[in-house]
Length: 273
Image (cartoon, rainbow, N blue to C red; front, side, top):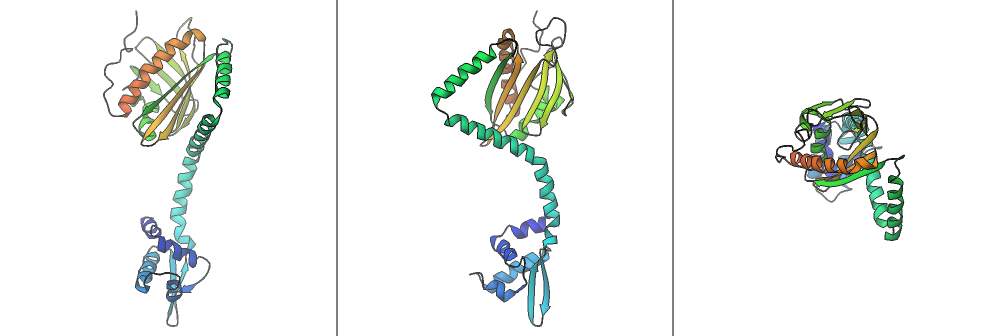
């Protein structure tokens, strides 16, 4: 496959393949379509032939060339597999960017009215409120993502004991300090792009029991860094402030480890009296 990639990397070679995709041409006929020298075209044809992308046979004194579609089979299989794995990620990023662009184009008055309406809805205990945070991290999504799904990496920024099974329905359990334990299940896991899991506190008489709320974390490329967007849904109003404080604390630590910095001792790793 490396030989194929090297062969089609040169623009003249790609144009040659287009010329002989459906017809057979001699080297001279191919050269007549280009401004480069005949020896240069011969060299390009040699590279394409050696890569298995072009077939060659002699017709009298003429050397005839034609593209070999099967020469692309290995590369085509690789690309199909690659895009199958990435389509969900690309769809998520594209939809997020489209939503952001639409948001920026709306009149300020409309945005203010909808924000007020949303705030009113979030204040209704029956529906629960939403905590939203957005931070920029100077690291790529593929660097940040493992810290969200790998137990050993998560321990570097949150919790003293972590159990994660990052697949739909898998366990999400984090002991923050040996006494206060969050547990839930993964709902969605899109590599290097998005994680969704349910969230609640183990124990008796808790306001947010396991499974009662949901956390969505989305990673969006932003130049050489990443915009991390967190939404914590369905929280009781009286739990908003404490969870907002907690997420501010832990997201700062996540940014530090993702950027290769030492987050320092975790002030929340010791149970409050």
